Image 1 (tube, rainbow, N blue to C red):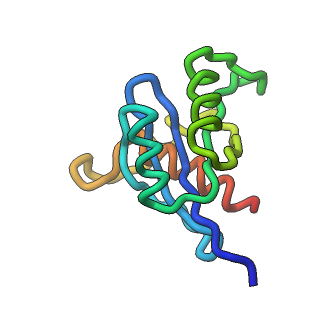
Image 2 (image 1 turned 180 degrees about the vertical axis):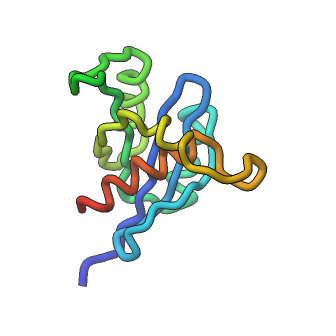
Length: 127
């Protein structure tokens, strides 16, 4: 039997980084928390014993890469400093979908966490 893999879903933003967790056994992504920088993400990767990082990739509505220099720098540093595989998932409309999920604001996860959950769930559904 294969080892259960732990995943961290990441919705990168210049101000906040939404995070979600999941594993290869249950295949259900759950909102986790919001980080403010790469150092926090790296700490969480170690604390949560993450095996694989699932990062939302910004794309234009046409499907072309958005080529955001800040996101590309984050990706490069994440790959270099985490020492873990980073899988990219199209994140188009993930923030809008997060906004569309109902519930009272004080009871639900942040928009960034929900977007990370949707990104990770998209990956787990195809894995």
